[in-house]
Length: 280
Image (cartoon, rainbow, N blue to C red; front, side, top):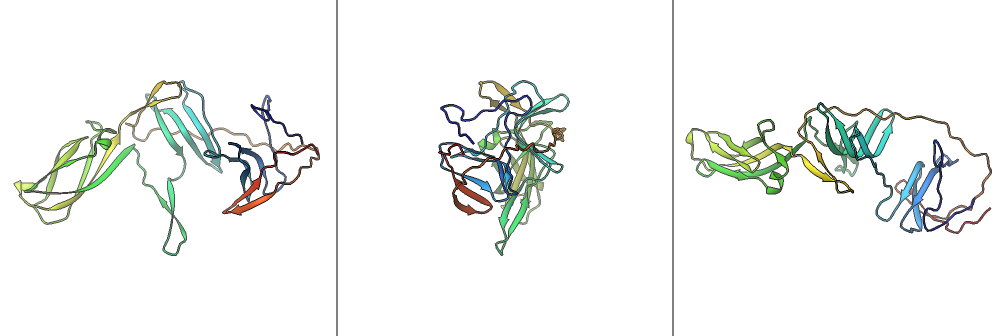
């Protein structure tokens, strides 16, 4: 093959249907490899993949340029066997339709991986809600039957508290008294009072849940869009339509000099880039 270089794009492809295609014949091969930042090595999965990207700070970058009122504008979309996820973008649904910005929107759970007592890998799942909520926790103490709790101003700035979106406060007493009730709830905090005008001095723990406030997001053109978070069970987008095609492999017998194997680790293979390949 011929290696093409230049100050702009090294290789470009244009087509009515597909601009560029890449094939790997080996069962563990990689269809297309991309390297940035003038790096000398790249990594591919031992089991292979369609695309592998290596960069100094970012391996793969995706962006959607639609800035109008399209219903779905996301930088990335991933699917597998009925599951799908949109990543980094906007969804405009509901009645009336409103924009909401998402990190990830898709089928499945939000999870993390931890190590168990025997160092085995275990999955933990995040709680999810029909509403967009922020939470906080803390401790307090009744002094003569009274306690005023002030929320962190950074949290207060980012929650919405009104008649339609009240803040929810939960108090757990840690000592004996006549019981308590919560009053004067706002985005700034709340007051805990002992029942029957009690005068106990008792510690307690508390937690709050509140709706996330709408936020302004400024795009690269300096335009402001409001991300709305005051919904409940907002309609969700379905998966994108895709076409499964057979690989149209070239019949040309092309020989390339194999790259040098540098290392392998945790399901990845690292190779040296051959920047000076000549025509075979």
